[in-house]
Length: 300
Image (cartoon, rainbow, N blue to C red; front, side, top):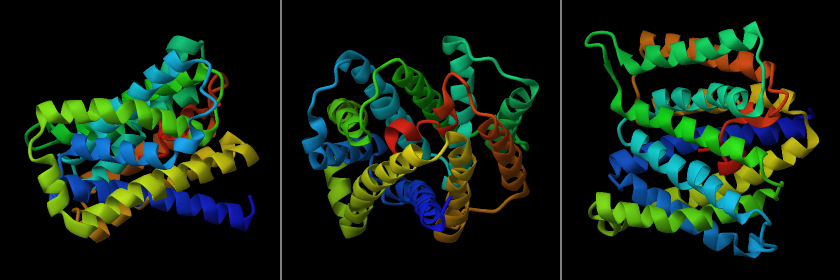
């Protein structure tokens, strides 16, 4: 990979990692209701990418299901989780999408795994348990359970994507956004309060965060990543995308003053080590599984 393309991938991973931190700030510090913020993000993507709606995909029913798993369902759980868990831990736990995708491909696509990937899957889950479980009280972090759920749902969407005819990156983005923003607004109306008031009160910082999520993450990040996928093998790109959780941890410590604990460090090393093993030995039936939900959602 040339220095230009590596710099592009480095930037994409930085943007994705920073987005976890920014979203945590929006839904926790600025107290914007998380499901509402997810709806606003998808609305922005749908509006900006309207030109990519046509031609209408042939398998629109499957795309609608994908939109729930990779769009509305995934982001609702992810943002609720970020409202209740530190960004540093969430950055690592979100990587469960990789072992989940591998397990899904085994169950539904007939993929077989060797002992190395089996160990990688066990390490990924063991590291997350180290992070999520409080050893003093043996309680599990409420927010990180939502993050894990988001990773699982995103993996289901990845399997569904395997079953439909390919569409362009931007077209996938706009249809997922179109199918996602209205249901999220409805759910937010029933479960959350003071949405618009809180969002407007957040001022320009919240609005900039929204623009960053829409333009920087969903459009630039996703578009650039698809450009790289067309040029390079998944087996090369997949391990390098582990820069994303590393950036997430570093930036959450620097910008949000997340605590650095031995438990977090050990859990991150174990879990990301397991993810790396899986990424280095990608699926045969679903090579993109190691990318997790990034394939459909443009990162977090």
